[in-house]
Image (cartoon, rainbow, N blue to C red; front, side, top):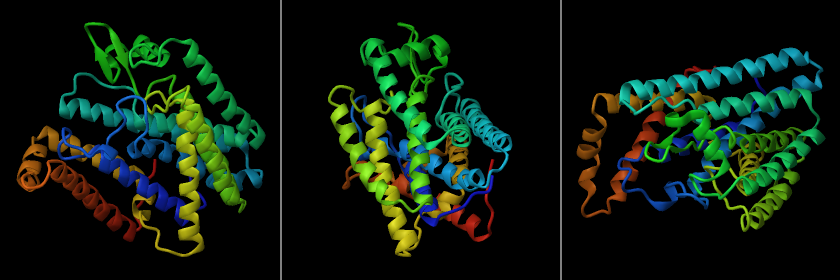
Length: 354
């Protein structure tokens, strides 16, 4: 699906993908700087903003691509079919990558849910909503989702990892195929599970609305709503904690507020001031970078190269450096390698789409 492109959006998407690669590929999982780790449960680190930023940008991109077609009164059924097919392709790619991890890395079980699966679901649902509903309806849906999810989770039991309603539902649906499963207790937890995908749709809808403001040059609303969302999310977190794994309603607003401000900053710096769109090469080949790096890690692990590369190429830094230093150096080198790959692809105008 071709789309109207803004260099700022491609750059922000690219920086987000680069951040994904950075936090997902440390040299040593036992030695990571705190900001580069997810919060253990409640709370929000910079790393916890990466995934919602990407879903937010999915919504922005849907607005930029579908908005002109909707304004031109293109066939809604054809537009809907396009987003549904692409959403399905993203889900299938996620399943294939998880199958590759299970086969090559010998994971305990195949994991049906994951990052790309959630992206595909959000892309498809929000794409259909963009085609079939008005801005007013979309705002009502955002409000209904965050309030309804709060009520559902509050009434569904304690917000512990094993006891919350989302985990109990995922345990019932997935059993041992959940990301975390304790065979002794029969309890599981899936951070990209079914119920917590519903508020992730609200995050993508916020991106859709922000993209419409960007498209219609109402950029002042980005900082206004960004600050409102941050204040509301922070206040709400006092009773409904920030929690990425549950994708709590306060987390939707908190991360969405930061994403709006980041989008405005990227637009002002790149589209208006004309600064170089750092990260653009990652942004225009996001699928290639994410899927390619995933397969690369699977192959390095399968052929037992990952450990020796780290130990011989980076671990020598300790001592005198702290053990976090070589771990971060490995992650930075990993991102740099893929920056070279996507840069070459961009120069040759090779773009992988699904």
